[in-house]
Image (cartoon, rainbow, N blue to C red; front, side):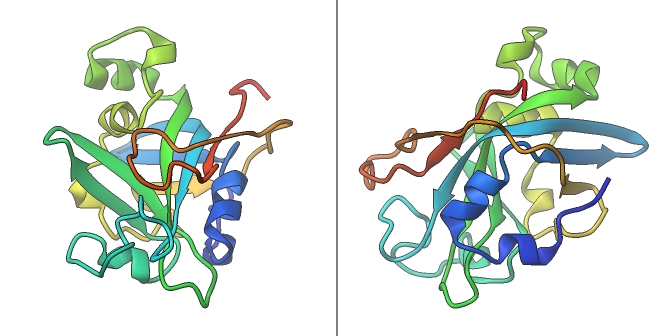
Length: 187
């Protein structure tokens, strides 16, 4: 397993969102591994992206989006879900992150089923809140360096044959931006 290097995330945020499709998200919990192929992402930039957490100003919650690429940006939303993002931006861009919206489970499926309390595999990790619940990703992973083989990282794997481009989901502003990217989970 080759962990994606920091340089991978040092690119246009939209491009990184596309390039993450087909890569494998890995979560180590003790000696157990949970993993899945990334099949849906969304790009969020800075000041010119009204849907981004970084569009108005730097806060305690979003400050990581302005920092080093290849770090985990995890936040709590709707009073019940965590969302997992990867900080990704060009060197001269002020901020940027890619939301990992969905994965196709590969390893540790029994534990994911237990965590999600469902055995319907297509429904196990097909949304950002479902994914973090299944993979046990919480605020404890905030600012984790994803370029190291630690408890959470992303490894290189197959590229998808086709990428589907659509508007981002669940936002009220910036709906004109086609920054949601997905692929068939069975390459």
